[in-house]
Length: 252
Ligand SMILES: NC(=O)c1ccc[n+]([C@@H]2O[C@H](COP(=O)([O-])OP(=O)(O)OC[C@H]3O[C@@H](n4cnc5c(N)ncnc54)[C@H](O)[C@@H]3O)[C@@H](O)[C@H]2O)c1
Image (cartoon, rainbow, N blue to C red; front, side, top):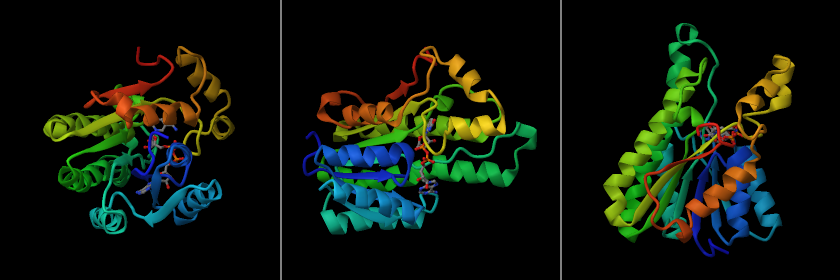
């Protein structure tokens, strides 16, 4: 019960890694604010938590909209009076195309959700945590935030930015007792990364991707979530400004 009575916000928790995190942090006692642009999925996460006798509330927010992000943080303070853990996890894969073929609109959209979204969240979370005198923030980057990913310039650039924001914010607020880290997942089976659907589009692609991973398999969402549970807990009390790869050895 590492999160007993802690207020935990998870963006993008209507699906995949974020949803699994919402269920897991709730199992450890956290009161979860499920936030997502997809209301139906967000409400489903909340019902599952409540069915398991946990506590959760859904707040719809598009992280690429600063006004909505600000409303989300204001709501949390009004309802709960504090924010212990913020997991800025919402993201999109963006379009897959070579740089010369990638449209300006597509670039802008991926950057605004994956990078500006994390900046807007952190910008509105830090004043709350400064007032409390403590707090933990965890951003979801990617191994594509550490190395290039051909045909995914916007995604890779946006996730590099997440690491830049994480490291800078961590250094700015370390003395204020606010820890800020990132995790960098590799291929993790979720609605965003669905090997069966990918194989239907291009036969054999999933086996090729798997072959690049030293552990020769994809991750499951709990392998990302277990790292989140540890990194946001007091067990990681001296860790800040880190981008931790959960990648079966890919970036080794
Ligand atoms: N699955 C992977 O292989 C993988 C690998 C590396 C990094 N990641 C990152 O992990 C995070 C979670 O990915 P996932 O695999 O669970 O994907 P997912 O698609 O299952 O979940 C992403 C969630 O974010 C929400 N979302 C999208 N745009 C939003 C917006 N503008 N505002 C608020 N919510 C929005 C979606 O509705 C969805 O519920 C993402 O940031 C992703 O880039 C995933």
